[in-house]
Length: 324
Image (cartoon, rainbow, N blue to C red; front, side, top):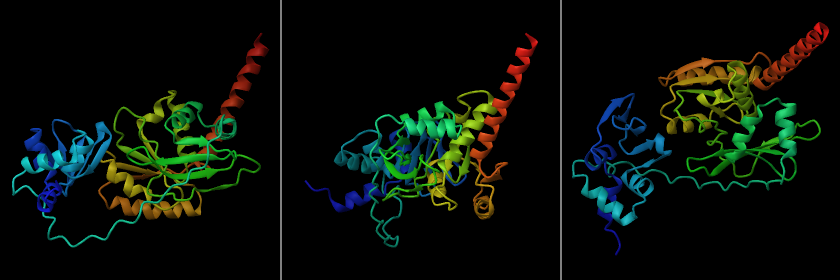
């Protein structure tokens, strides 16, 4: 039988916080315009009392029905009954008098290029020419965020909350390696995001123009700390340029981030974009820092450090040979 429209509207408007209190016995503390569960600190409900995200489960949604169908795999009809049963008439968010929202734009269909068999050019370009840590490259490839296409280009993939590709950019590896571009159907809200590999929830986010700079910064972190896993303690996001389209979308889903560190290129475009974004996000109750690379970008810094390390090793080797 068809679900009564009034009942369905009530279920969709059920107060998520009140539902968790009655259905699970959870309690919440209001902090920073959101509600954080005392029993499960990674469960957060936003100020609208409808949007929720459970970090430790890696899932989020809008409303009680989303929780019951996603987190508990409950059939939709049963979820409707459960939502209405566990909320009384005073526990529904006032949705009925809200102005009608414009329909959401259609989801773009991302067209990804075909993968090659053995990614030899990818490893040669990223690890040998660019100096990026091979373990970081392997981790990103296992997460389907990085691969080589049949034309020898490197494909950097931005995933959504369900690990579905929503954005991809290309980088050439042949000739002068100047080719770059975005794949057709890319949604720039989903940037190349290196934040899902830590066992903790990082509170600071490093922000870059390109995936290679984000990977280079992670490699530099490993070298300076002397630990191959040091990069996993922080979040890194590539904007795919100097506009912040991906940043507010990222912050909406990562409540734990309280500090932004802008690491854009050390050139005119990068400095100007950094100044604009730093002012903008400082007004949003976030700690904002600026960290320009010594050279033009962090890959240039990484390559300079790799050259310095090789030179020091050669010098030490000559000294050892002379002492024999």
